[in-house]
Length: 230
Image (cartoon, rainbow, N blue to C red):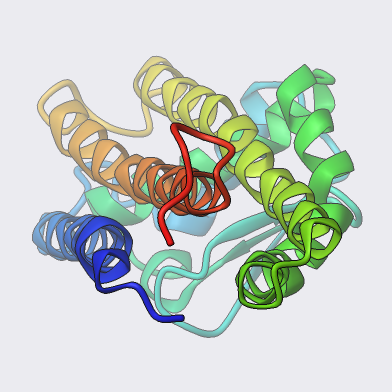
């Protein structure tokens, strides 16, 4: 049965967290997209220089479609930069590009949390599709087994998102440090890079917090945390 408290305790908080983090990321990126980088380097050039200076080889920097769809794929060692990053010579573009280069450096250095996250991808993918429904229908049908499977699958999503946090924070820390040390941004531009990456990091914090809230709610409704609410 539908629980009105779900809206108050889960749906509303997760919506606020998600929308707030997304809005902050976009507004901060947009703000520093108007600030041209003093070096004149595009995002693609900055990423390439950061990788070269760090001694990372075999990574291809390519353009990808979409807005803020930047990512690093460790499977084929491809660093994909979105349209707003690849060919733009702005503080935002360099910050995001160097963040993705940070992931490539993590991969080359065998950074533990990155490896753990990669291992969790398959089960987290299954959990994101079926975990929530398993818990919902488990409660509706009063099936302990079905609820347990759903909770286990959804827990994998939570674990994946928690492991993602140090991966993203570390990539940002590498970007902030190396972008300045390698002369990709000036001292005055470091603050802009930091703000862009800090705002982006909040999206991962919001996602993890939302999933934790959701899991705790269903565990409580099932009577596994503090008793059952019928």
